[in-house]
Image (cartoon, rainbow, N blue to C red; front, side, top):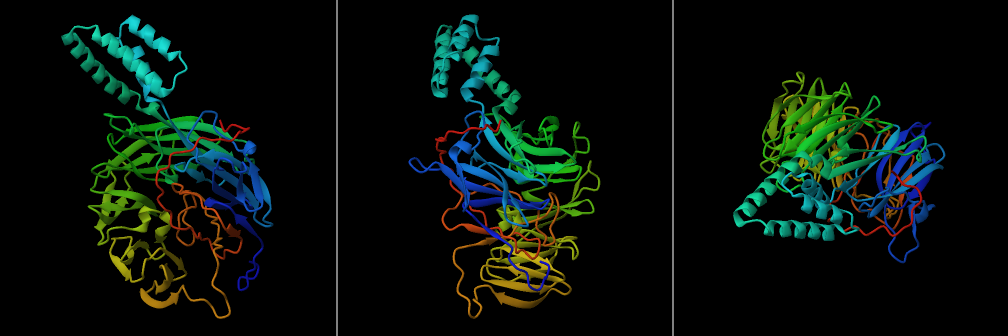
Length: 526
């Protein structure tokens, strides 16, 4: 880039699989690639790069069995030469969350306590169960049984005991046990599902540390690192029958992953729909019937607090700090796209400053945050919809311009011009008067050039966590992973002329039954 008018390609690396995350930090391109597990009978190795092959014996895994249907490779590539300087590969699942900070990659896997184990512990601590039944249950607990077999043995033991009781007493005991079981599940809802976090530091990808938090995370925005603290938002108890869920935020030491503090019990009966951390503040949107925004003070990691909340119809699935104590939310109300601006200048009393429901049924922002663009210099935000793009004034959410373009996907600004990219054309707007400057046909092939093949260039983002890039996109991080692709390798190049990310639209994949890991592995993650 020494000559901006004539940039040259320095190097490229072929990528096998799907790029989950990419960022530039301290002269290194930190790349996370997802690959399918080798199929039975295939050569047991993983190939994250076209010229890098990892034998299955070098693939890392958790110390306890977890669902696994993909592998993730964290690759550190010298930005100047393109040389691979370090690599680690581990098993994971498609619903894992991968978050990249400036100095580490954090990856999750989720475990759930067996229902039979929870019921066993409940019965053993119940003062309604006679000693002889407890003794039998402890004997069953000592057997090496499958979860299904253990559950059946527990049921048979309890049924046998209840049959010895007179009918009226049997009915009363059964009802009391049912009520006690529901209360037990509520009290132990944070034990039912656990999100485990593995940290891979950029300077030594093999120096892994692990930690855990109760519940399940939503996506990469559920994570954030600030001043040496990892903040994680979760929903707990959602999978338990007859139990109201709740929502928590946990603070951990960003290096050791030791838990420091927590805010628990937000919006019982709801789940997390949107999260954004901004400095010492945290914003969590939960939803079931209404959409509360919770404002958190995270300045003291050992004692984080919820300062206030505000309820409103619908929900916001994406939150974006606008500055000046305002946060914009994009979501849905009554089946239509909704935009809202929250005034959080008084965290104990946040309020809805502006709210607007658009005449659109859907926006790509619900699938990827890359579809949202905020230009703070001109005070506008861009929202794509199937019927065209909206350029909204972030002060009052009025429409500055409706952009007529087929299937708008992204918008980026350069100087005083906003470029809106559709499926087949790009529209250029003058942001000083919102006039349409020109339209560029994206399907045209320059004279003398052939139609490009399947190789897809991917440029990397150099933004820091929690910032907005020059092009208006939030930091690079993983969304819920979709199935990795195979075939012609993606090319990772160093020819990006601006801080931008060419990220394909994520696809929603059907839930697959994970195959058991059939590989021998050497180094445990935890």
